Amino acid sequence: MTRIVGIIPARMASSRFAGKPLALIHGKPMIEHVYHRSKMCNQLEEVFVATCDKEIKVAVEAFGGKVKCRERRRQAEAYRTFVERFQGS
Image (cartoon, rainbow, N blue to C red; front, side, top):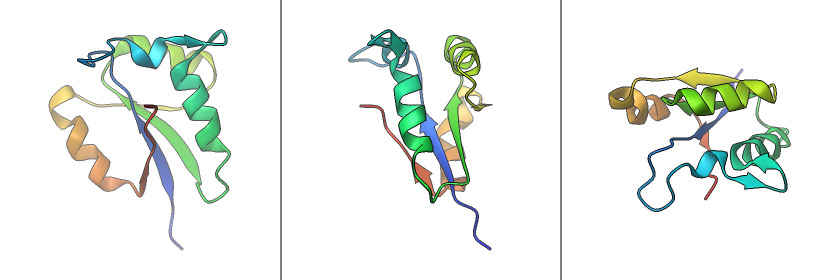
């Protein structure tokens, strides 16, 4: 049986909008909105946020989300392992 997992890449150091994953939208961080929308997909067995930033990890865990932490240099390579990626932008 094929296992389908969704990964949401998130980092604080965006060149256009630094800190975007934690920007509040209707009182919740953007990453929380993206996570919960991704969880609505019935085909996904699990959804994770992939990040190397402690602030994002803490925020995701605060709303009950799952986080996979990667070193910055290995983060891009980690995405090849997963079937789906979701972008918050």
